[in-house]
Length: 325
Ligand code: PEP
Ligand code: MG
Image 1 (cartoon, rainbow, N blue to C red):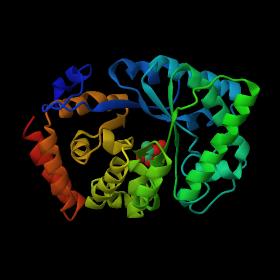
Image 2 (tube, helix red, strand yellow):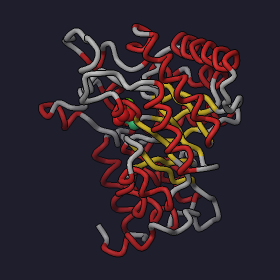
Image 3 (cartoon, rainbow, N blue to C red):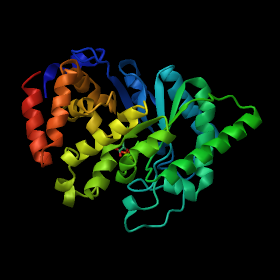
């Protein structure tokens, strides 16, 4: 890639035709390394909280979680921090919890499903997150949502915690935003129904690719079938964005596709206005935004949705985008 790209890291990400795109950070802990990107970004688009639970024999207490969440919220002040409730299971087992071996862990007891099986885990995490909301701009997000029932059950757990904290006199921000990850095709297809129940969505393209293409994201034997650039992905993403837009609700992308400048150009052309990524991608995505007219991006989106393979999409994007900036 180009060597001058890093010069773009502290630029304001506005397209040449004047559309401001939010560039947000994916983080996995509340430590200085993870928070170093705060000065270059519009918030945290994905706080992967499961790392608090991993590599240890005891569960993190409410107080420990509260301290970590508060630190991130205070670092970003008014900027949103999308705190994702724990996504344990799949490729991320938990030593501090007895988890039976599964033959298909990615299709098994993961994330929200695990939380519903062990309600005390979600309860503790929600208490910590809500208490931390008094210190910044919390957006709470649930991962691995497959059905409307998942949404209803997660919201019910949340209501219970709100009532509890209120009764105990703990301060919290009463109208923080609540959203879901769209990373399972069933809820992507029902996006209109989901949008009626939540304030925002964030598309997890890593798992969406895995579940849409039926390819284990961690299995090297089938990695050539794992195709995030597949036209089916871009069509489904457009479907989600337009369903949420009809109800005036924002959709971001926080999977790897959002931090890939070629794909991100298609995403903004598909109506995405928030992209969340690792710090290492911020400069190159900003560079793309600063040189990509929204009209041009919309044409890219139209074009890739009509193609027949990921290979064709990739070739087209490389040729079209890299020749212009
Ligand atoms: C995703 O699935 O795209 C995502 C952002 O979540 P994770 O990679 O943590 O599963
Ligand atoms: Mg995921």
